[in-house]
Image 1 (tube, one colour):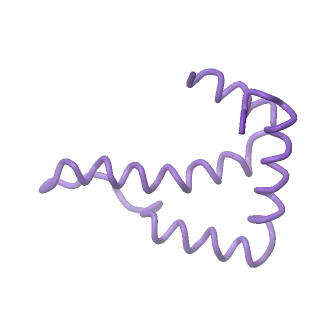
Image 2 (spheres, helix red, strand yellow):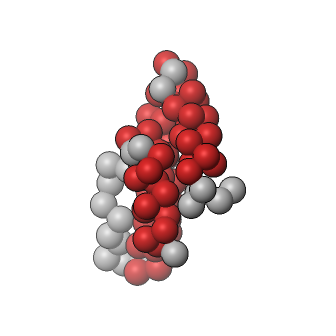
Length: 83
């Protein structure tokens, strides 16, 4: 999937919203927030490698939330910025 293409970004956003804006989808997102540590610090004073693992887990939820909040144009711009 090429998210620098506005049509593909629109399609993915449409699918994300169809999935996560339903009552069932909202429950799944709540579960992902809990299981991916969305409300917890990523810092681990004992295991520094764990910080990277925790950040990666949170990135899953951050990506979903971004697609639910941003316009297709904003998604395309964000993807292009990260390239």
